[in-house]
Length: 210
Image (cartoon, rainbow, N blue to C red; front, side, top):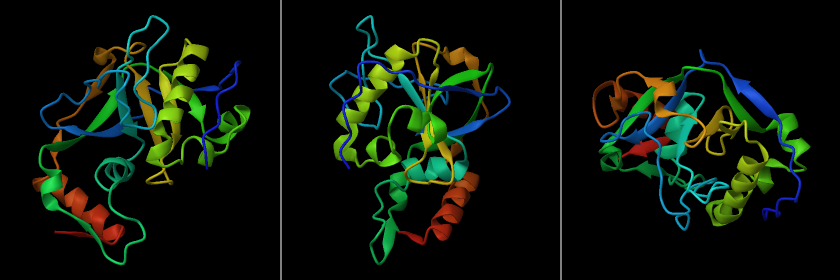
């Protein structure tokens, strides 16, 4: 389903992500767990990034997921075909990846892109949060407009497309400081406990590690 153009006037609904509620993130092992990612505005490699804020500065972003399984599905499994008879994941694709659990130091105000918040914007999930990658440039336009329309928002939250039992979130790097997020010791996904988590998730999803 095609993503519609955002209307001129947007009144997104904000909800609170409490400080005691941790979330999971998969990131390059060489990067700090709370490091925001930035690139040129012309680089669109995710559902809602990258875009410029009102000052013409590209907004750095940090993606996370409500659960470890959702983080694995969103990052590690996202390119594994869903409808293939046998689904494979090369073990070497885990090299250099880590999983971290992040806890905010303060309440986060997030634009709600699920439930009442999505309906409030006149949208269905298939028009924004469950689209395929070819629609990402248009979803980025929505992210920019939502960011402009909600100056108090620290980010956005929606139901994960890759794991629709959990929420995904994206934080705006011009609204929240890195020191307002804390993280435990990152788990290397190619060995030890981190690899055990991948094995468990792959087994549950009937994905074969090769």
